[in-house]
Length: 394
Image (cartoon, rainbow, N blue to C red; front, side):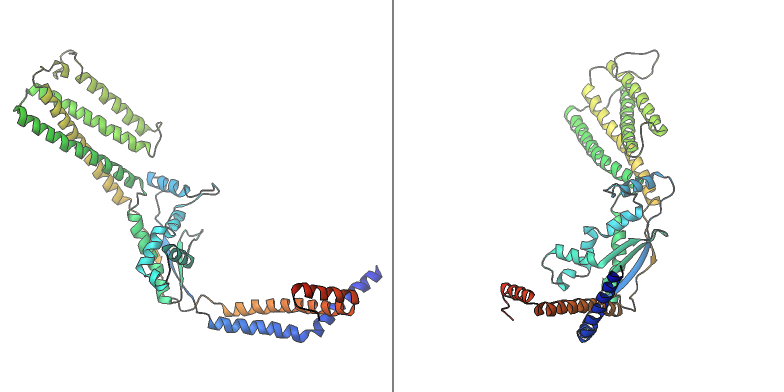
């Protein structure tokens, strides 16, 4: 054991001897790396980073809109690990291709950077953007790097403006989705109403049928109203299905109302007379003018349905204005006074240590080669390696 300890001590001393022997080489390489790195850091173009902070829209507790936003944000979690918040949704929007293209066009980055294609410009812009969420405060920090401090601040603020414009065209809230749904339904019903009006006009001009019996008119109006209410209730059920289940009390209430309306419509359209009902079923209307009644009923139906849907559409628009997406700017980006990089001191320190370890490693390699040349067998092997590498023989 004592011999092993002595051997270790001798080996350690040998290492120190090698370092002392090659001290000039180690010092030259170490200081050379430090000086070279310092020169390079002075030549490098300084980069500035401007930061802005925003507060993403805050939804109220357990409202339907907040649930939908949470569902949309959850859909971004492709891996299924961890929950996403609405802030994650807005960070994803900031990094989207649509907003990136807006920034490229707004600051003419394609021409300034001499990019050959738009994909290259997008990659460049996205590498300059940092969008992070503060887990404690919930604020989103938007940081942009650029060689011009004012330009960096302008781009950071432009991201906020483009995000606001982008969210205006998205149906994020429940009210926005209802408004879009009713908007599509209104287009179809309006076209059907115009067609019914034209059919009615053509029929009257062709046949001269301008008036009908008042009792038949009451039947037509009653049926048209019922059919319109049924259609409106069916639309309401479709809207409810987007954010609730059939077990919901509101859903069940609308479903029961729809069943009652359908039963009443079936009674009016039947051929039977029940008791002293003042409204005559359609089956008992005389055959004269039946075609006129059908067209009048179709017209009344579309007219009433259009009015009902228009009311629902206006209500959805009002709700949407109350539940509007509001992105609040906490800190607007200003031109930074200090550069973000290069960090010259850190670069020099890292280069110094890297040069030190490299020079020590090189010193041991040279010492090994020098000792190997003293041995005939090892010298021959070294010469063979040199010949194989094309360096010739020493």
